[in-house]
Image 1 (cartoon, each protein chain N blue to C red):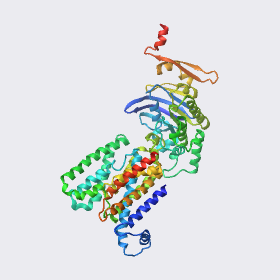
Image 2 (cartoon, chains in turn yellow, purple):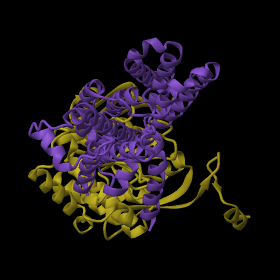
Image 3 (cartoon, chains in turn cyan, blue):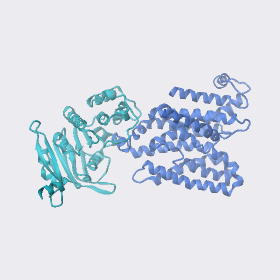
Image 4 (cartoon, each protein chain N blue to C red):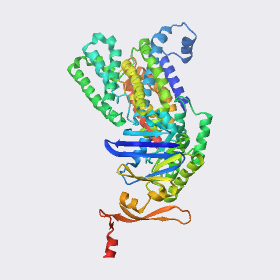
Length: 276
Length: 318
């Protein structure tokens, strides 16, 4: 029942070793988040799993089959990836873009069949993008665009959905909307989710498990309560923070109050002045 | 809109067959071509007008299609058959034949074809570094073209007394083109069109960027190589027959895009048809304007095509 297994994985990005040695497993039907400071290798790991970067060592198993044994099309049927949002949007309508998601499911010369159209409608409906179908991507707001791109990923009918910082550039309510959408896709359709997140509160609220990366290696992985601790905040991110639990939703959240210096003391001039 | 472009192509062909030293009406052309009419102009139509018009049409198809494919593959609006060295490669070897070995002129077409394909292959190889990035390919193309271009200039300078013979090849002209040229180009046009249409969806996906295309199941490097090869053979077959007709490959795909949008499934056939219309009409003008003197079609293409393109560009902004 493993959707993804990494064994002794090492990946380079631009000739620089980024992922040093990662062994890790993800079960089917769960939501996983990867967090870590800038440059820890989060996005590189996601790209390697998506087949965009070739590992220099180790293996990636998808559905118990080595990644290297998948064809491009086969891989695109098993997993899809929402890439970091880009400024320049293609000159397409939402429906055309989402239609591209059917490419790995049919021969290149074949047009869209009726079942393809139905799947496109389904993907648009799931992401709440049906009403946007005939609009150009360039005419959409940030949140609407993100829905369109997630609909594209869904039209591939993936078993594993990778998301690279899906909430960047969105305001706080749209961030939560996207996170709710992802969680709904997981619950309704059993799609395994693996996403890179910047916001630790999102990771805490929506993940079954969190993978904390530090300098190309796994610092810790497991349930939010076990991984998202004040120690993690201090050792991995170099910040002082408190983890609290919301009594109503039982969700964890973290409140960061300052940077830590080399010795682990809080680095905040005003705070120190207050002490002095 | 595709229908309108197709009509323009038909008009261009009919006008081109009908116009010349003797005017022939469309009705008569129809009789001669499809009802075996054995009138006084039979020879003129079958041996001069028709093959020349069809060569013009195929040149239009091949260059426009090549440009449209390359602009898609490179994701760059300035890409055209020049970029992959087709013109400079065909030019250098073609001019070498015309100037140094004029007695070998029957070899002009195959040798120019060889030059065009070889230049493209060299550029692609030089640009390769764990795959080909479009920008690197374009820069390698500019550099190699400049290198080969200096060879052409050197030949023209050293043998300035023989430049006249090479001039029409440099500008691009359709004078005295007939069935053999048509036979040479037709297979490339047909195969190129078929492969381009199969690749049209790939081009749409490549337009999203390499990472997105790969994520959707496109083998990006293989596809890029395939489509560049198709574009090279299309352009090489045209350029080796009519000379360095550069303009069509750059501007016609842009016009088609302004008229029909950027979906390659429509854009490629539209470019091909528009190429037919533009080259046949311009060749007719080239024969007509200063009759009985015939201009190389390349001159007309630049003189009329460029302002028309600028007009479309301005209109689109409004």
